[in-house]
Every structure is written in C-alpha cells, then in structure tokens.
Length: 54
Image 1 (cartoon, rainbow, N blue to C red):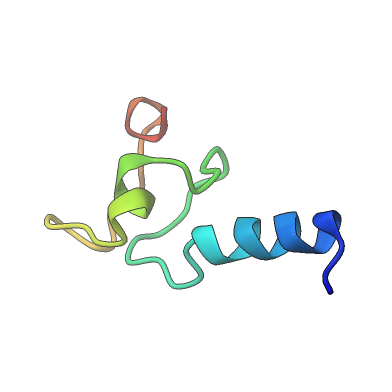
Image 2: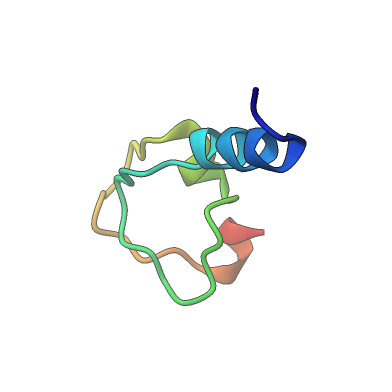
C-alpha cells in the first residue's frame, strides 16, 4: 500500500507536463494556459509574458 503522501506526490507529478512546447520564462510555474493545454498554436519558441502565465 502507498502512504497518503506518496499518493499525493504521484498525482502531483502526473498532472504536471514533462514535455513543454514552448520556452519557459523565469516566472512560469507550469500553470499557464499553454502548459495546461500542452500545446501552443502560435509560435512554439515564444517566451510567455506575465499576463499569459497568470
């Protein structure tokens, strides 16, 4: 059996994208709209602005 802490860690890790289709800037915490959809329809090399991250 897994401990509750191990279960929470597994859920957290599996819900975060490991392969991103854009360059991450310093303020990116992987909760932006691009990370959540795992793809970017515009320029994949675009650096995200603070407004796009929040």
